Amino acid sequence: MRKFLYPFLTGFILLITLVGCNTTPKETDNGWVKLATKTANFQTDTDKITPNSLFGSNHYDSLKLTCIQGSVQIDSIQVNYANGHVQKLSTLGLLTKNSSTRAMKLDRDQNKIKSIDLTYSSVGNTTLNLAGVTKKAKLEIWAKKSADTNK
Figure: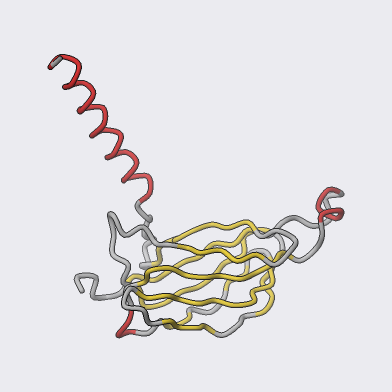
Protein backbone atom coordinates (compact mmCIF):
# COMPACT_ATOMS: atom_id res chain seq x y z
CA MET A 1 0.00 0.00 0.00
CA ARG A 2 2.82 2.38 0.88
CA LYS A 3 4.55 1.94 -2.49
CA PHE A 4 1.37 3.15 -4.24
CA LEU A 5 0.58 5.99 -1.83
CA TYR A 6 4.00 7.69 -2.06
CA PRO A 7 3.96 8.17 -5.89
CA PHE A 8 0.34 9.30 -5.74
CA LEU A 9 1.04 11.97 -3.10
CA THR A 10 4.18 13.11 -4.92
CA GLY A 11 2.26 13.46 -8.18
CA PHE A 12 -0.58 15.28 -6.44
CA ILE A 13 1.79 17.80 -4.84
CA LEU A 14 3.54 18.34 -8.20
CA LEU A 15 0.19 18.91 -9.93
CA ILE A 16 -0.93 21.46 -7.32
CA THR A 17 2.40 23.29 -7.65
CA LEU A 18 2.18 23.47 -11.45
CA VAL A 19 -1.44 24.66 -11.40
CA GLY A 20 -0.53 27.33 -8.85
CA CYS A 21 2.36 28.59 -10.96
CA ASN A 22 0.19 28.67 -14.07
CA THR A 23 -2.65 30.65 -12.44
CA THR A 24 -0.47 33.19 -10.64
CA PRO A 25 -0.83 36.54 -12.42
CA LYS A 26 2.36 37.67 -14.16
CA GLU A 27 3.59 41.16 -13.28
CA THR A 28 5.05 43.45 -15.94
CA ASP A 29 8.10 45.64 -15.37
CA ASN A 30 5.93 48.64 -14.52
CA GLY A 31 3.81 46.82 -11.89
CA TRP A 32 0.72 45.98 -13.98
CA VAL A 33 -0.80 42.50 -13.60
CA LYS A 34 -3.13 40.94 -16.18
CA LEU A 35 -6.17 39.67 -14.29
CA ALA A 36 -8.12 38.23 -17.21
CA THR A 37 -8.72 38.12 -20.96
CA LYS A 38 -12.34 38.12 -22.10
CA THR A 39 -13.97 37.70 -25.52
CA ALA A 40 -17.07 39.82 -26.09
CA ASN A 41 -20.06 38.43 -27.96
CA PHE A 42 -22.18 40.56 -30.27
CA GLN A 43 -24.68 41.07 -27.48
CA THR A 44 -24.45 42.63 -24.04
CA ASP A 45 -22.39 40.39 -21.78
CA THR A 46 -21.67 40.60 -18.05
CA ASP A 47 -18.62 38.84 -16.65
CA LYS A 48 -17.34 38.50 -13.10
CA ILE A 49 -13.55 38.61 -12.86
CA THR A 50 -12.12 37.18 -9.66
CA PRO A 51 -8.41 37.83 -9.05
CA ASN A 52 -6.50 34.73 -7.97
CA SER A 53 -5.97 35.25 -4.24
CA LEU A 54 -4.43 31.84 -3.55
CA PHE A 55 -0.90 32.83 -4.52
CA GLY A 56 -0.97 36.61 -4.70
CA SER A 57 -2.24 39.78 -3.16
CA ASN A 58 -5.47 41.39 -4.31
CA HIS A 59 -4.28 44.87 -3.32
CA TYR A 60 -4.28 47.14 -6.34
CA ASP A 61 -4.17 50.92 -6.86
CA SER A 62 -5.48 51.19 -10.42
CA LEU A 63 -7.42 49.30 -13.06
CA LYS A 64 -7.37 49.58 -16.86
CA LEU A 65 -8.86 47.77 -19.84
CA THR A 66 -7.09 47.06 -23.14
CA CYS A 67 -8.80 46.00 -26.37
CA ILE A 68 -6.51 43.61 -28.29
CA GLN A 69 -8.95 42.69 -31.11
CA GLY A 70 -12.09 44.18 -32.63
CA SER A 71 -14.11 46.98 -31.03
CA VAL A 72 -15.91 46.79 -27.71
CA GLN A 73 -18.50 48.99 -26.03
CA ILE A 74 -17.90 49.23 -22.25
CA ASP A 75 -21.22 49.70 -20.44
CA SER A 76 -20.22 49.46 -16.78
CA ILE A 77 -17.44 48.48 -14.42
CA GLN A 78 -18.12 47.65 -10.78
CA VAL A 79 -15.36 46.73 -8.32
CA ASN A 80 -16.45 44.64 -5.33
CA TYR A 81 -14.13 44.71 -2.33
CA ALA A 82 -13.64 42.02 0.31
CA ASN A 83 -15.26 44.14 3.05
CA GLY A 84 -18.49 44.63 1.04
CA HIS A 85 -17.67 48.09 -0.32
CA VAL A 86 -18.65 48.61 -3.99
CA GLN A 87 -17.01 51.12 -6.34
CA LYS A 88 -18.57 51.97 -9.71
CA LEU A 89 -16.07 53.26 -12.24
CA SER A 90 -17.15 55.72 -14.92
CA THR A 91 -18.48 54.20 -18.14
CA LEU A 92 -15.77 54.43 -20.72
CA GLY A 93 -17.57 54.04 -24.05
CA LEU A 94 -15.93 52.47 -27.09
CA LEU A 95 -12.49 50.85 -27.26
CA THR A 96 -10.91 49.79 -30.56
CA LYS A 97 -8.04 47.42 -31.33
CA ASN A 98 -4.78 48.34 -29.55
CA SER A 99 -6.40 51.01 -27.38
CA SER A 100 -6.55 51.20 -23.60
CA THR A 101 -8.51 53.11 -21.03
CA ARG A 102 -6.81 55.51 -18.70
CA ALA A 103 -5.64 54.09 -15.39
CA MET A 104 -8.71 54.30 -13.14
CA LYS A 105 -7.90 54.90 -9.47
CA LEU A 106 -9.34 52.39 -7.04
CA ASP A 107 -10.47 53.29 -3.51
CA ARG A 108 -7.18 53.29 -1.59
CA ASP A 109 -8.75 52.39 1.76
CA GLN A 110 -10.75 49.53 0.25
CA ASN A 111 -8.21 48.09 -2.18
CA LYS A 112 -8.53 44.33 -1.49
CA ILE A 113 -10.54 43.29 -4.56
CA LYS A 114 -12.97 40.40 -4.28
CA SER A 115 -14.33 40.62 -7.84
CA ILE A 116 -14.92 42.93 -10.80
CA ASP A 117 -18.26 42.98 -12.65
CA LEU A 118 -17.81 44.09 -16.24
CA THR A 119 -20.68 44.70 -18.69
CA TYR A 120 -19.72 45.10 -22.36
CA SER A 121 -20.56 44.11 -25.93
CA SER A 122 -18.60 43.64 -29.13
CA VAL A 123 -19.36 46.07 -31.95
CA GLY A 124 -20.58 44.31 -35.11
CA ASN A 125 -22.68 41.20 -35.65
CA THR A 126 -22.38 37.48 -36.34
CA THR A 127 -22.90 37.82 -40.10
CA LEU A 128 -20.08 40.36 -40.44
CA ASN A 129 -17.90 38.12 -38.26
CA LEU A 130 -18.46 35.13 -40.57
CA ALA A 131 -17.63 37.30 -43.59
CA GLY A 132 -14.38 38.39 -41.91
CA VAL A 133 -15.37 42.05 -41.79
CA THR A 134 -15.54 42.36 -37.99
CA LYS A 135 -14.21 40.14 -35.25
CA LYS A 136 -15.41 39.53 -31.73
CA ALA A 137 -13.61 41.88 -29.41
CA LYS A 138 -10.96 40.59 -27.01
CA LEU A 139 -10.45 42.58 -23.86
CA GLU A 140 -7.69 42.38 -21.23
CA ILE A 141 -8.28 43.52 -17.66
CA TRP A 142 -5.15 44.90 -15.96
CA ALA A 143 -4.53 46.03 -12.37
CA LYS A 144 -1.56 47.92 -10.96
CA LYS A 145 -0.13 46.48 -7.78
CA SER A 146 -0.31 48.58 -4.68
CA ALA A 147 2.99 50.00 -3.46
CA ASP A 148 2.21 48.42 -0.09
CA THR A 149 1.50 44.76 -0.95
CA ASN A 150 1.88 43.57 2.66
CA LYS A 151 -1.43 45.04 3.82
